[in-house]
Structures are given as C-alpha cells and as structure tokens.
Length: 361
View 1 (cartoon, rainbow, N blue to C red):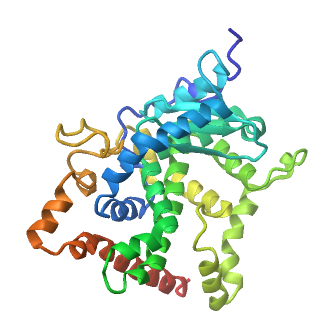
View 2 (view 1 turned 120 degrees about the horizontal axis):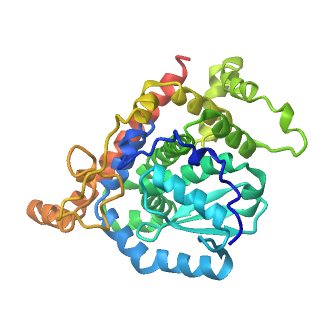
View 3 (view 1 turned 180 degrees about the vertical axis):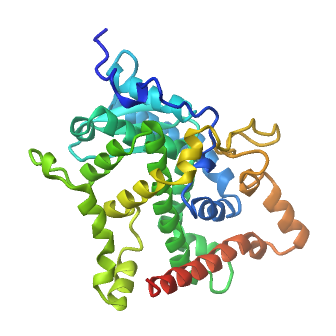
C-alpha cells in the first residue's frame, strides 16, 4: 500500500481535541435549528421523505455514484479516505460513503439519510491543501450530522411540486404561502451553510486553513496565491454602507433565492466564531452531547444529533400523530395544513423583521 500522503495534516496533530458524542446543536448557527424545526413541522414530511429516501432516492444515488464515480476506501485513494475518517472521528459521526468525480469545479456535496455519502470534485481535491480539504470535508460531515439532506429534499419538493400541493389542500389563500415559504427555506439553507463552516473549523481547530479554503472557493487564481489578502475580502462585507437603503433592499430581494451565503460573509462569520466563547468552550470539552434515542423514536425519523431530552426530537413528525389529530378534530385537510400555514405566517414575520433590520444598519 502506498505511503500515507497527509500524515502531517492538522487533523492528526497530537493536541487535536476529539469531540466525543458532540451534538450538532452545540455549533449550530443562530436560526438554523428554528428554521429546520418549521420544516420538520410540516405534517407527514419526515415519514414521507424517509420512506422515499430508503426506497428510492438513496438507492438510485448509490447506483449512480458507483456507476459514474470512483468510490474511495482504505485501499483506493487511501490518503483521502483517511482524512474523511479522521474528520468523522473528531465530529463523532459515522463514516459515509465517499466518491470522487472528475469535475474541474471546486465543489463537494453530500446526500442521503440512512446511507449517506460525500462527493468530492477532482478539481477541489487538486486545488486545496490537505488542511483546506479537511475543512471542506468537515463542512460536509456537518451536513450529515445535522441531517440537513432530508429537509433540503423537502424544500426541493416544495419548489417543484407546489402547484400540485396547492391543488389538493383546499385552503383559501394557500397559494399565497409559496413565496414566504420559499424565502424561509432559502434562509434556512444559508444558515445551515454557516453551521457547517463551523463544523469544518472544529475538524481543523485552526482558523487559517478554513479561511484559505473558503477564499479559494470564491476565486482561485493559480500563481497569485501569495497576493491574496483575506482581510481585504472580509472588508467587502461593508459594501452595503456605500449604497442607499433602497439599493440594499433590492439587493436582498434579488439574492433571496441563493442557497449559499456569499464568501466574504462566510469568511467574516467564521472568523467571528473562531474568536468567540462558544468555540473555546467546545474545545475545552463543554458542549452538548448526543444521547441514545428513545426506543419509540423511529430510526428513520431521528436525525443524527437530535437529543431525546431537551433537543428538537419532539419536532419530528411521529407516525400516526397527524392522522389522529385530524380525525379527532374532524377538520380534515384544514387541520393537516395548519402547521404549514403557521410556518408561512412566521416566514412573513421574519422577512419583515429582516427587512426592517436592514434599514437600521
């Protein structure tokens, strides 16, 4: 077997803190959990998506990945696989399937609920140092640990099949909820990215490679790496002060459907988190830990990191709960849609508050 290529990577340092049984709720970005809870509250969503994942989505993804990509293991690209194993050990997460695909774009992604996987683009692996790559891997492990994939799928379904949904839910005005729900979904999606940047940092426990990895994702120019100034890039987040409030509002509306925060904002957020008390407490061993799931909680619905007590497991839909409540109230579709309507109303309120906050800058 070839020699290990990355034995000196930060993740293997002797002083690296292994975050045994860490719960993803220990490092979530503000608003991530609340927005995710609203998605979980949609009646039947958890059961439906878990069934679809187990019986179709994960199987077709597994087949496609194995037919079209290269699956890495201890015996196939072993140095890369060892980085994934180490990141998972630090974040206390089961090692997923890992694939490499030939693609020049600097990107990586994860999918699946029961059988999770990480896909690394060859361009990303070639462009990043081992430490920078560990930041990206840790970011993807964060998505798996927080079970983001299942509810990303829910949001995608809302986008694709909204018209069908609205036609079968006979609630006056339900069509008006599409925009606020989508705004809420995209806002959560962006907040989840901040959460997973924190996961990447926790794998490295060193801010420098995390910042440089993000900087390369925003624009890598081969041969000019020594002239890159990350602080200058972070300073770009102040651009909103140079334009009037109307332009700021229009900019927010134009970019409301983006799935990832802009890189200067991610750089700033990561730097602030690295300098904060929450990060220091985690490295000191003071963090929320996962506990065994209650026997009654179906494995398909219990997201990794959800806690049986004090966590947000209660927000997950439970089998039969929706049907029983609707039958008892005799309200049929109206009761089934109530959480969706409430989520839409909350989304509108949050959007108004965000817009109001913008004018206070």
